[in-house]
Image (cartoon, rainbow, N blue to C red):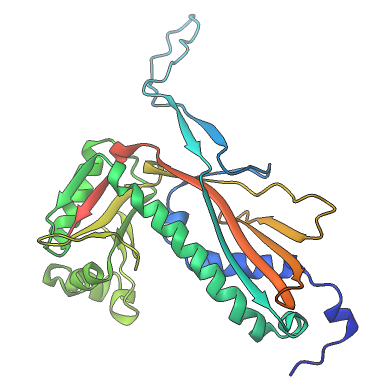
Length: 301
């Protein structure tokens, strides 16, 4: 058992728990780091409507000598409305909070599963935007192959998706299908050796390829697995920190926004006399929307 001094036990620091939770969140997200993000340090509230501008596309014009330049007006621009309607929380009671604060391993037993639960819910909500994407490739009930990925590549190319920031997110079964695809064996052996060594596919036909255990599967005959081939602007995640609770509420709080991932998390702490322990809560506030649905497609399998 850790030696718990008064210095450790007296000031319970939600910031320490929030920082640790953010580090766990970073390592357990897939789509959240591949999509467009709108993050602000200004606090939001549940139900707040954000109006996020998207400028559209421009057309290059000739510069004629001795004349003023023409001002380009983008086409296809719009304002996307995103509602911060996802308030996700994980609450727990910690009776021996001083020991948990002092012992890093013990703290992780609380923080890690809480952060993973939030990460999984965030990923699930983002992946549900498959229903709002415009295009599909592949066939339900048939595993993804190299040919399916090439069809997704052609789809994004035809729809003028930018060449950079493309990602393919596949289900566990489709990851194995790609690793076993005979047409890719030479590529994996010589160009993407991590595919053989670690099961990490890497870049495939211009897509940074990832596996998500949370890819939606719609039950049917056959079941329909909804993998994604996207440019980052196809889906938007808007996230805000919370407002602070009232100063006299007796709640200690730490709200952090991660400058790397754009994730925002709040940790709340209050003694609960009924349960004779610390009521500890981790929560997040966000909303998601299909920003440019034509530059992403559902890869059916």
